[in-house]
Length: 302
Figure 1 (cartoon, rainbow, N blue to C red):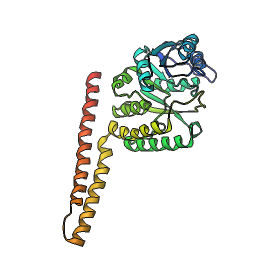
Figure 2: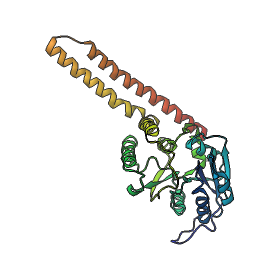
Figure 3: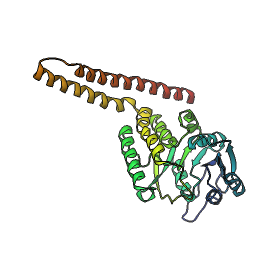
């Protein structure tokens, strides 16, 4: 897949090896122009819009603009739409982007350039000005720093939905992806855990057209679970070991205090010791399960 580069060039001779998958729910305000912009940049690309149970004209407008439309009979979630689009895609490379007008189709070229350099997953990293709110900025900053600690490599944007990926390798992890909004987190950590090459390119995301489908309380609680998913997907023991050490240290401290003050070993000290051991063995078992899971992927690939 040869990519011609230039400041004002578009891929007029680009091969049909790229599929662009756009999940959309009630995005009639933007979906038509999003599809048109993609086809202006990638005239020969396969553009797939997955209509996730919309009750407006999303599907009709996407089809009119030139996209292949897959319609869910009811809303299954953003991750489910991603999975439907990935299964239907025929290109060697899949580009995922939102249907609300936030992403600039011209940035697809930046992603594909990195794919050509040998990367398996390329993520568009949003700058601080592209965050929808200050609260979202704080949450994403925390996710990025936490996941960077887990992986041991800087992660610039854990939750960005604008990404290009090797289709065959992405399909191997399809069963891991949730049906909700956290598919970017899961897929990113799965690629890191499997030893595939991951990189980031800077992008600027515009304000979305229409109303966001993310709800602050409902999705805020769910996004907190991302923290634990990051750890359990990549290295569970690295997440549970500090907790085990913390409880065990509390147990030691409490035992020293009660022994000095009362000359005895208390039930609280025993509970803290047991909690520390439970966290450690839970992490150890989870680590083995995680290893077996990725061993199965390696056997499938070979």
